[in-house]
Length: 273
Image (cartoon, rainbow, N blue to C red; front, side, top):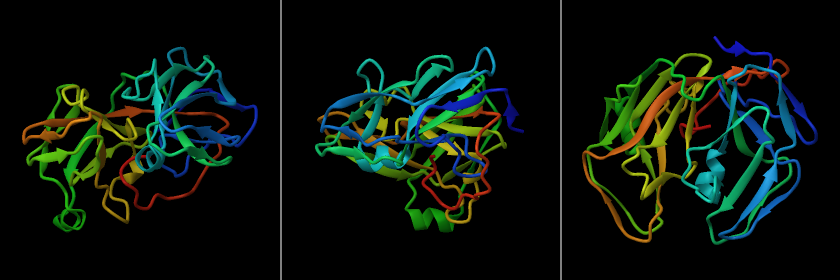
């Protein structure tokens, strides 16, 4: 079950962060004013809310909304590095984020738009049970799923290994349907990050896949996991069969005492929040 930890969200301005569906691990964060990021540049923002109370080891992690990462080239950075797997802070810290626009076009985030996700956890290394299954042959055919398989990582998680070659042009982004789905318990989420061996040249467009428990066996696509991978180099990349692309692990999340409740049920999606 989801854990109520005594934390409360205090908003100074703008919309209060809230979950979009019953099974969402992340809070949607909405722009409280228009945000502009020049092509190939970055801007720094301070989120207009804080989290008061909670547990001693409580952490707050921030991730780019998948559509902003995949379609608009938004990244979060730390010390100038856009390949970091999300930004994690202690809940008592000011929530200062660096937004990078990797595209050649001006990025405008309108006031009221959901562009960042926030997950509250009791410790970022805690693990939860995870079951990986294949989607149906019908779904595999419909999505043109790439051939691959999973291997146990030895840390209550899995590695996704491709069984066919994938090529990327310089800076090219490709969406890879895995033909797999992940089942996690209520109150937990599936974390997807690039494997350490491919990080020098591949990253997820949304940096971290945040897969909610209600994505599994949803009514639209069974929970098929899609990976939006980007070649970060200026060279052609050939990813050969047997390459481990990503690591998959499940983690618990915490619920704030005063958060806005929702009854919305998830339908479809691409596998990440």
